[in-house]
Length: 296
Image (cartoon, rainbow, N blue to C red; front, top):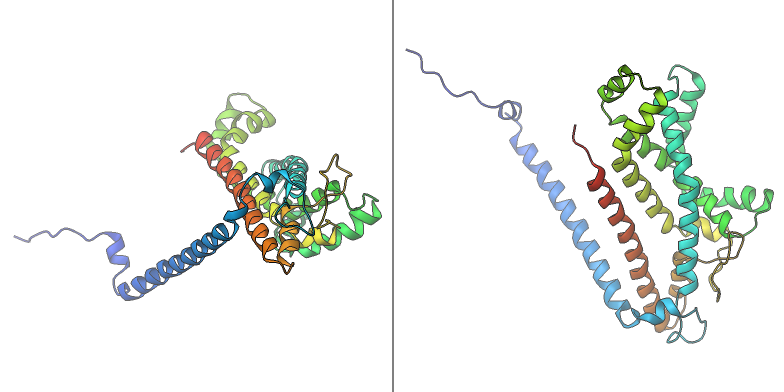
């Protein structure tokens, strides 16, 4: 009688003859991740230790000073950052989500103009940020006459992250199973009722995560804002969308360029504040993803 042996799994069969290469590849991946994590941890530790002496109320209560780093603060930069990023979100998120809905749910993929739109979105996501700064300077600030103001910075940063928001929103909408749409339409709902009541609520985790990650990129940008007249020394908070402004990356750049050690400590402390804002934004994205995530 023949003895039946337990068949090997498909994974074992597929990996036959390739164990050494697979182990080397896995080892290289783990080593790369470990090296990146160690360097990141070292950098964060250095910044935190360097800025610890100035991580107090003076940093967010006082205005900048060009002479005395002991009393200098970053209140105008923090307030300007919140103004710019809030207005950027207000301008970008509705536009990006609406564009994603059109491209995924309404656009005819056989039409040439829809293909051109998709191609341009993919290309715009890879353009360096300084190009958007030149665009904002030449068209938004000068041609449209908005000047070097909060609204100019917000529109420019919105154009910078808009392709990212559209791509992330499209992926989130595409991840909703077609059976959800088909069931809703079969029950008599219109296409917009299906999108607004079924597709969008199921897409919230992916849309929120992608949008906040895009805004996290915008909040750390300095190159386009240097082109748009973000002043490195301002002793007042913006009082409207047409006011002059500064932001934390510009203020950090200004302090780093100073020769006195006290300003370098201030720059490190401001970096910690910027990182805390980024962590808060990412925490909101994680909470939204866990709160509304559905498993199909």
